Length: 338
Image 1 (cartoon, one colour):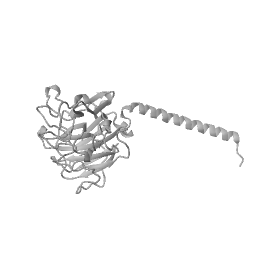
Image 2: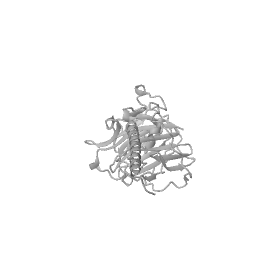
Image 3: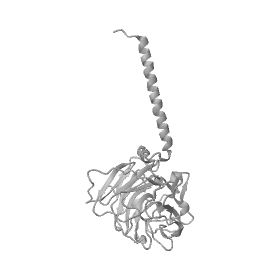
Image 4: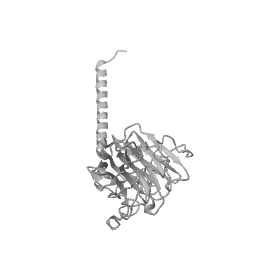
């Protein structure tokens, strides 16, 4: 059958025009979305679904502020040894264990024996942002200052090492004249319970330095020591370590291979804490679950810190002073009780 070249040319031109207009519309929509989600870049495309949530929501206890100076500050003279790592009153506390917890600090390549993960892992809840650092909002959080955990924590918490500026929370480990300084951000309230916890962050890259997101409560709060951890060992930030403590007993480390370097770009890391299981997530994807009838149950604080170690080189690696200062950065934290 003969071909009408004039009509064929008209058809081709018309088709190309339609395709061009469609492509332009898609591009304009993408630019619009990107502009509205710039603060959340690098933490997953699904982040747009909950942008409309009220970021001012602060669950847990009321913020005591200046009327309750001892609360949640992690020590000082009236409250030594609070939080991550303990002190004389709380040896071996928190992330990394120590002599009182020899199971801590292993490479964690295998699941804890006896803990059978369920066949299906739960989907990540749609939790609201409770501290939006991109907007300069710290929510229920404040910096620890002027004390040390002791033990494997070879630094003094310094409020000047925890900086909220330019749309980021930066927690930095540095060396002074005669000591090291670390940084910690924690909630005033200890009323955070079963639910989803997540943060958009970049890990600190330096052997001997640990950066983290975790929940914690312990003896200085008048409770048993319960804790759930997300930890990055600065010696290899292509992996993340998951762990938990029940009444001071840890040894549940699991090392997950991310497939990317957590110190280079922002990603969301989180966990869903339920009564009978804990599920950890990376960028919205469930990557590891433990199921047990012996898990943390005590209401806790939400905490983040960056610190340098001593005496646990087998776990954290020796401190590389040439890489200091080393900084972990956070864009936001979110939480929802379930």
